[in-house]
Image (cartoon, rainbow over all chains, first blue to last red; front, side, top):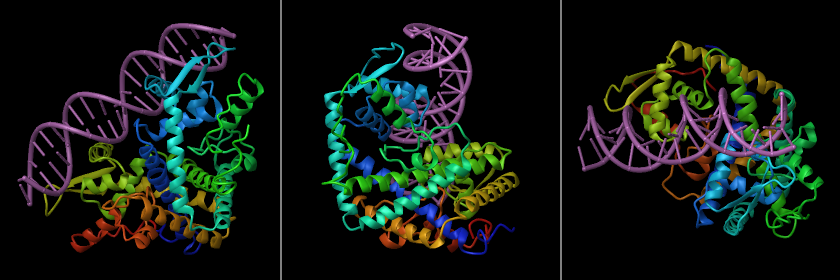
Length: 210
Length: 210
DNA sequence: GAAGATTGATTGTTCAATCTTG
DNA sequence: CAAGATTGAACAATCAATCTTC
């Protein structure tokens, strides 16, 4: 029974485990007590976090292929197709054929989903202010930087090439450090570029994330 | 095309979103590229992360009720029961009736699962050394502290009382700051106390985490 | 023929109901 | 009858196969 101690001498391994544990716990609690809870408070229609993610994606990019949706949601094409279908039946998404390519799809929000999204954002903002009011922005900035550097390092080291980054979860980011540090492409960005290039609609989501 | 800036006026909300995004991304990447990947490298039997979690729990606490297993895994009792059943069929767990209370269950590892766990731990340690070799332990310590304080604050603020903490994921912690800061109980700890009290076995897992 | 989306079969999850022991 | 564990029905995820449009 060796494999007892810590990483190098002693302590290091325990420290790293603590660090990883802290990051995991924070992520889990945020998802549960901030995101999902805000969603519940947004009231009305019961919607899962993964469904919200889809709605948010649509509001931000006017997504036009199921594959992109799937990648951003982190699920299979099949699952994305079914998820979209369900939201359409719930009247939270509008689905129309692509204009230039009839294989692809154009998704847009409906009034109810716009309201839902806005209510969620408001509830979330309230919670975040309560929680983060007492922390130093500088500390947060610094910590975020460290986390990003670690993420980047893991990706550099460990992930086989040719894969896009799709770890954003619900946090689509204009300025993604992973992207910058690793040169890895991200489907959110990828889609924004593509849909930007063909200026079919102004689309102006304008409500999220400000 | 605005949607660039941030929270209240400018900056704060964007910063917090970035921070939360960084934490989420790190957690996701660690799960994918460290934990799951180490598990794949451990080779032999294909086991999911959630199954590993169960094995690890057993190795650390000699778990004795399905409900505890369920809570720590973060799934329902039904799912836990089925998961245990499957691992038993795969010969990775031994299940016997409780000694004092025949309703409950006593779980223990088998030789193959012991080997699997050890291989996983070794692969994981290798990866962690590669990844974290270049970071300052002090920065990690400090960041972990900040993360913990934020988690604790969210729990204080947002979570309805009477719930246990079960957010550890795969990171069972002897010294959980959430527990200390919030007084909230944790099932891992809870079980350790209980099983410590009835000294039925030395059990000495002793191999994990030290 | 290849890219996109959908459908069918399997697996894993939940909730509700049931069975067993205390 | 309460606490524990299991079983059955319903729902979402996956992979493989299919259908449609380019």
